[in-house]
Image 1 (tube, protein in one colour):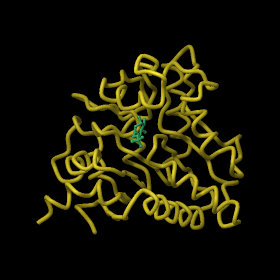
Image 2 (cartoon, helix red, strand yellow):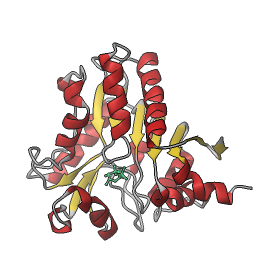
Image 3 (cartoon, rainbow, N blue to C red):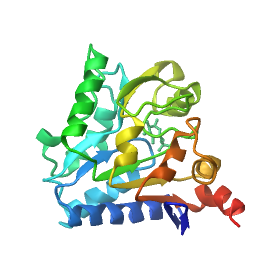
Length: 251
Ligand code: GLP
């Protein structure tokens, strides 16, 4: 089904969402083995990453020619910290596939000069032109990457202060909310919206109202996910619980 520009695929549960998302990702790699892929962290894509590892082990997908970017990273954080997104990506996907690490890039949460880090990352993205395949989750408050709800959004890579609701939501990965970094570096909204194809994964009742607000209400910087309404080719793969609020409000 489609809501405006957004294609929505509703699956029964997280497992089905992960399988469907992996099918879409695998099809992308088949049609363009040299894809520039921008990866996301969080719980939402983990199941898809597991499926992709299985596909790789079965000889069904090849990552050797892709370029791997990532949306965001806490700041400051050490790469060796198990909660860093650098560690997350290696642990959940990169260490288990045939990725060429010379073409793998993630914002450096250890950088002393975050402004330079952000500019360098933008230059890197621009050197590839557009992202071929953008993987996304969405925060309960509507953030994509770490582009938090705000009066204005930056198109470019920048440092953000994390919203208290994000710190609380991500505290589950740390030993306490106090351990969650208060800042992050994130790709801006520009390359996300300009990507050639985007795949948004969302599951669970707690994302239902977020998706309704992002997809069915007006575009606003207070709901960064709503900018996906402007995307040329976005597919949201969501479970029935996450779909419930959209379903209730469909005519
Ligand atoms: C995190 C990440 C986002 C992610 C979102 C949702 O904080 N920075 O990139 O999409 O929050 O996370 P989850 O999939 O765990 O709900």
